[in-house]
Amino acid sequence: MALCGGVGAMALPSELIVHIFSFLSDRDKLRASAVCSRWRECLFYPALWTELKLRIGGGGSGGCNGGSSSEETPRLEFLMRKFGSFVRELQLELAPVEGYLSPLNSEQSSARMEQPPGPDNDPQLSERWRDAMATYLDQVLCVFSSIRNNRNLQKLSLYGDTCILQQEGLLDSSNLHQIHQGDKKINEIQQLFMELLSNGRQLRWLSCSFMLGLVTPCSLACLSNPSAETLQHLSLLDHQLGPLISPSELDRLSNLHSLALDFSDLTSELCGLLASPRRTPLHRLSLLLNGAALEFKPLEGTATEDDWKALVRVSANLRVYIMALEVDSSELLRVLKPSLPLERLHLDSYNTLVSDATLELISQQYNKTLTHFLLLRDDPDFPDLSVNRNEDPLVLLAWRCTQLAVLVIHGYTVWSHNLVAISRLRGSSLRVLTVSEESIDFDPDQSMCMEGDPVHNLVKEVSLGLGRVWHPCLDSSLVLSEPTQHFHRELHAFSMGM
Image (tube, rainbow, N blue to C red):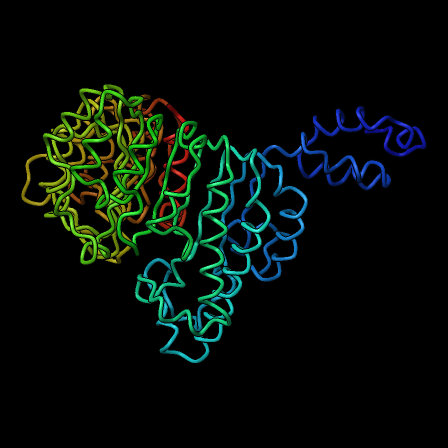
């Protein structure tokens, strides 16, 4: 970029400046635009900004500049004003809470474990809750006001990191009266979203995950006919509401390749529509099963074994990803049908225990399809699933599931000798083996027979089994990501990897 320092840079034609910009990263584009006013003008040439990926807020969790979400609102407004009308792909994560609703005292445990009191219960928290909620509403309004008339938009992916805004895990809409013009803003947001859907002409990817107040059961009806023909991925997730996709609307979307929704919304009728031979075969299906929402969204009427058989007959390459959050084993046994082509399974909980019988069922039913298995529990107790069993259920799973490539464990006791057995059974085909150090235990009798440090010996044996250097995970926070955020990002990678 030596030419940027002289007069020659100012004399370059606009077409060449734009061509130079096309080879630069977004950050370098901004730096190069400081050369002169002509370079600044060329910075906003539409062809240079076909894709925009942003995370607004979140402080230490990936926010753009580590500031509070409200401080980043002017930056968001600037970007949306410049690019919103023509950007083709917009991926946006809004985190109005982290760094904004900080813990009130140092005695609070991890953010995953401690849900804050509801906004009505604590005066200090109530004020910060109102500020965070108002910031969120203003930012969503900013985004949709800018993209409402964008007919070129092909991909829209939105995630609201708003779990902490929900009282006891569920948003109480009555709290919106605490926000200045809260009800009015929610209505305006929903109207703008529906305008965007009706104005679009070539939308191929639509993903809205946990965007409070955005999607309603009527939203999808506004999708234009051209976009209904071009749409290949649909993800509507908000476990606070009833079904967001009606059978009639799903019937319009005949070219879907991938779909993500709440497990309770996958009714027998919806599954039957997906199994229609008139449709493009479905390749990826991501399902979120939230135990906290089952009281309001029960499993009655969801897809049966016969429904899954019919769907697989039409969509032979279908693969399914399920995250079950705080779900009892009895409920898991209800939904894990034999014909479900399960490829990825994430069992996450704070207190709920996964039983050894559930792991046995998983390893037997999905031995030919399961590639990713995450077993996480955020609790100080580490139960041993191998108690009263001749064989450890995790070792059996590694033995039976011949396609297993990713195994992540935290919150359950994993005996060192079983970890070695898992590494030897799957070898180098197990691309990811992540086990938190605090989950690993050592057999005292076995340790007495071995020389040297048991941890060092374990690292050596597992590394030999995998055919690469391996170490236990020393920081459990790297394993225990926020579940809804993990699901949003994972379903994106899963659906893109067709």
